[in-house]
Image (tube, rainbow, N blue to C red; front, side, top):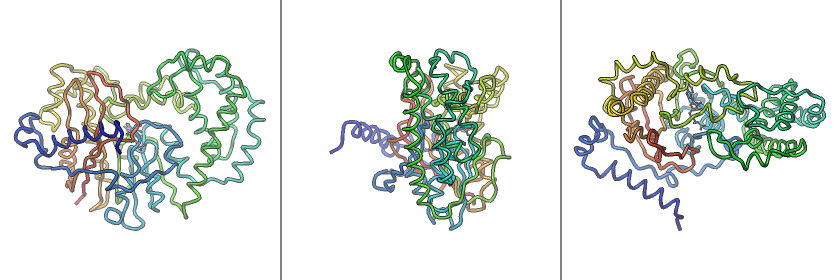
Length: 444
Ligand SMILES: C[S@@+](CC[C@H](N)C(=O)[O-])C[C@H]1O[C@@H](n2cnc3c(N)ncnc32)[C@H](O)[C@@H]1O
């Protein structure tokens, strides 16, 4: 028996599938002006039957936006794409899904992300821990918290988001965490702190990015030291249990190298890779930085004064400068110009966001190409989205862009999104993605 949600997903899938497979390619090409669909038919990807059912608890230790379904990397981490002793890179590493699955399979992993929280999360998930040392630190932790002065970050409206006594207790916990000298243990405590920070704030616990909630405030107004301690301990126990169970299953694991940096920067890429698997950010559909700002500010991973500058480095950023408008001068002739020019007719700002997104993705593709070995494979998982009601066929554009870079296109698949944690807010400028495309390329 399928439930209503599943049926809706299936209906939407069939709707999309019809578009992909049944519409006369000529009609489609006329509709989309420049559509390449007929050249690159996509295979249906039935997630349940084609992909192994991989529920690995470790992927749940932190709620990071737009996580990849682990079954996707897992399906491609095999001898067809990777030799024994192979190496993989995810240049948009996020919560580390690809590297975790790669590590389980015994591969050497590399990751890049512009969000410092992603680096912390991926490191914690993939780094062995001296558990004896960890538990001795843990046993003394709360007595040190009581002694510490609060270490409270400075950011605008902190008092609106965090009640004064909550700030005080969180600040004391943070100060005690920062005194832990063993790096792996400290990182676990920091991740635990990040995991509870949203529930300690006056923001809705679920909605991303943070929105104020009266209900959340009510829960925090009389929050005691003991209740914060209990929430922290409960979360820490869950993280430790999940992490230690997971890490104990790994035999002589390779510890991935994860770097903070931009995928557009060639200097952060390793060389001689066998495989790149990644799911890039979307055009203005996810506000990664705004979504994780409390965690970043509190942990000192980002200062408010640097936020705008960092936001500009995000691919798909909405934070553009006046000077960026000159980029639109070279819009004509790009693979995305049929779509972006249509957006430009109604909204120049949104057109610029999309144009810059594709330019940045083009630079990223070059970096990926250069970091792969000959015959190395590149697997791109992404969705399409609509801007100002214009549905952009990202996957078609990406195929052409990758080919321009030197890749050959091997095959493509389409999968209904079922598990990714996506923003579901629909508005006239950005739609959410209902399907994912898995595009496979080779560096010949
Ligand atoms: C769709 S998420 C990746 C999710 C990841 N596959 C996972 O399973 O958690 C995209 C990631 O791209 C990162 N990102 C955005 N702009 C970037 C840039 N210029 N360089 C590197 N990473 C960037 C975001 O911080 C986010 O973590």
